[in-house]
Image 1 (cartoon, protein in one colour):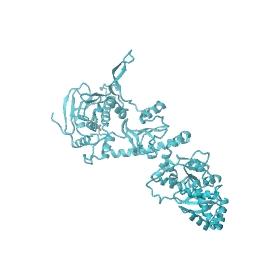
Image 2 (tube, protein in one colour):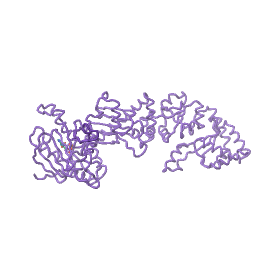
Image 3 (cartoon, helix red, strand yellow):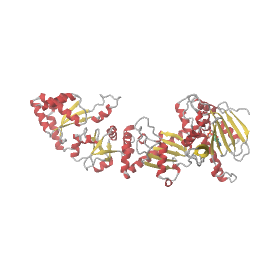
Image 4 (spheres, protein in one colour):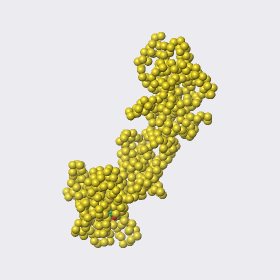
Length: 631
Ligand code: ADP
């Protein structure tokens, strides 16, 4: 029979398919299996209302076989099959199910375009990525004629009558020869086929069978083996997320998670969700017990596996998870998504968005429940992934703070445990307006800060911020439950009475010249000097003014790209007005300026040290201290 030409669109797509440096050639198998499963579905549904169809549910199957020598991979199904016209119409034109609009030149190897194909598949034609010839023999159910469609690619196809005993379709792929870049032969290996079926088509509802060879001990022998051929079903058919919750044991969930997401530990939490209405989907989500080793690096790939009615269409669908929940693993299965590229692509996008929203809501609410009902578990989770939640608050200009602010915790001076902001506020004294916090390297170091000691002594609770992101996240939140956040080493603490404030103001005013002298003696980057009346036992401490705290400066300066001049904290040396040293300084200002100069330097160095900052001129300070000791 004369060769017929493909319709133009098909030709272009074939060209692109074969010539592109496309990385996911393996999806061809998924496409063919899905087609076979659809064909069986069609016949099965017809049989529900048509008594003349005798095939029983349990007879349906998809078969795969391999002939390595002839380089042929065969897939067959006993589904509805195709008539001559259907062969012509379905396989002669690409993507019959939805028109396919190629906006770009097919020779354009634009990565994005190729990826789209990888994600949504182009059905039957993808087989040309690995085959140089394809033969399809098909017999429509109820017909006694069978036809063979054959093509070697873009140059066209032929259709001839052939013999076929029963209804269904047999597709023979003649696998391409290996090249330097591509080992097509792997598609002729049992293990590879098995792995691909597991990966993409594990939940196809009909058995996918293959004769496989296994080595077995010979009966009655201890060391003699024989090769046994077994008919093996490669797919597990019912997805765990389609089973009733009550039918799935914890162990099954754990095994599924560990196998699928390569974790050696069981997940901390399993979340199931089923939504019908605006978007129809089911999800099975897992919160891992620990962060993967690369979690906080660029290598980590977030995303959920995306299925369309049991068939995997994307391994890491990033759009389904916001960054702050990037630790969640799992799957989403929706009947609203189709395998095909089609005009509906844009709609998929919308569908995906609405699924993503629902998934996000579900994760947030499950975490909230865990926090409320399983505190210990939540703290375990928080130790692993809390940083990510705090980044989530900071990122995108605080857009997600409503979702996240009740999920974050900090260690606090109250019993040294993790507290939520809600808990902090619930314990606040009636008249207090601020949520106090201090930041530093560790809880121990922060708790020793002079300002922290004094705020605690005044009866307030202090949150201990030990991570880089913490202060930035709180700055983004600005308030919680209408209470402002206040850095005890920076902001006006508002813990003294009006009288105390007034008298401090006067003392500061009186000592203006001395402060100027002290400031000049210290030089460096000190912004100003003043008295404080809120310190307990310490002689002096460092605080800061302006938007950047001393700790934020430390964090920001770790970032090589930052302009270190611009992000300097404006440091203030605060001298305890109630400490004998204050009187001593005043006295020296009158009697011995040289000595005051040295004392100022020592005092400043001490203040830096207790604030967790390093001294810039340690040997000078050391000499000064020795000098004092020898006096
Ligand atoms: P799609 O599956 O997206 O419609 P394909 O290119 O994969 O596109 O297949 C085109 C059409 O060919 C299918 O819609 C179906 O009607 C038909 N077809 C493909 N494979 C089979 C099969 N194994 N049995 C019956 N019909 C099939």
